[in-house]
Length: 457
Image 1: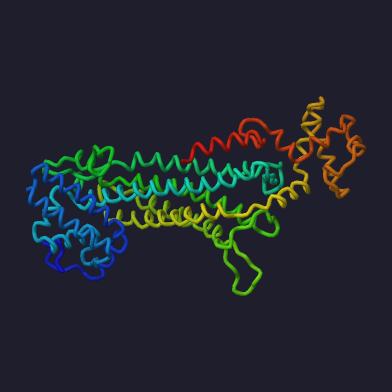
Image 2: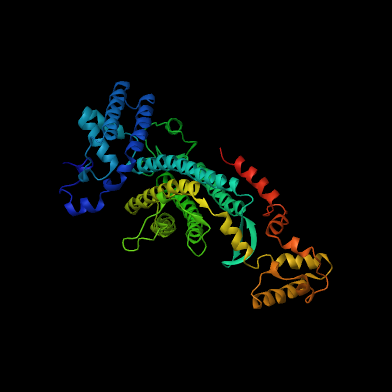
């Protein structure tokens, strides 16, 4: 099969070179976006009288036929035609004859592939934004049911202070809110049209780049043709955002793994999101959150791969840039799968509030409140801190918790203790007392929950 660019060459391409340099194995994912860009381009060619209206109609009809065949999986793409652009152009010429060759007037594969990727990534970014919001809704659903559920709060994975479980879940809601905002904001930089920049220097044809941009839904055209065909910042930005997003997914996944273990026993994941062991029949493995946690390295790798690829590349287009797509495709698909699983898994998980409360009853996470209690009564906080440290050490030695100590035992450490110390140490009171803005106090969490609901549709 002859090459569409073969006029300059006296020998056929080595088969190994064809296989090594071909991108059709992965850029086939851009097929419909490529046709979308070509339809806008040919319509502009006709409107600008660069080709005739009859030729425009023929080419548009041929592109729609090919589009339908691709959607119905009736097309076999060829390695010999290298990439999705040459494959579609070859199919078009076979469908409508030599007039199909006029489609490429006033453009190059360099601006064509860039346009395809802008169209692809805009579509996928908007889709991923919706999936992030679905996870947020699942978090809000669980938080709404567990404002009054108390769980140990941790620092250094050591019990620190009791918090509302809703408060803990909403911490992830706001992480995902920032991810959503970053995705939405990035569309501003994705939504630029490179079409009409041609190979690198523009074209002598009187093309109307503003028209094709408008037809394709782009807000702007690149003002510099060299930048238009060589810019991959929009993909780098997406991969950066994706890396932060998968970090948040990984952190939440780790908590789900810990909480569902027998050692914590705070939640149970639905059977639909777990698997068993081939040898140990009692096992219920949290494979989904483990895989979500594991996908982090994959997405980080895609970001580092593109950063390394672009480092030191001179303007404008270089064949190296063929390697820009697979990491982008892989990251989109990885996030799509991760977010699509995370939302229903969070929605369906069983929260074991009784076990959470029992854990709070059997620790010393209310110790800070004793220090606050003494500070309110006039003892400097640093001195109060020392007193409470000694009380905790004593309680551990006596195998008691702070609510188990008698008033006489408390008075051995300070005469400032009165009967009201027990009210101050009750977990509900400890949580409720933290009523500062953004705190875990029940009133604050209820306000935060209402704010979160305003951020999802």
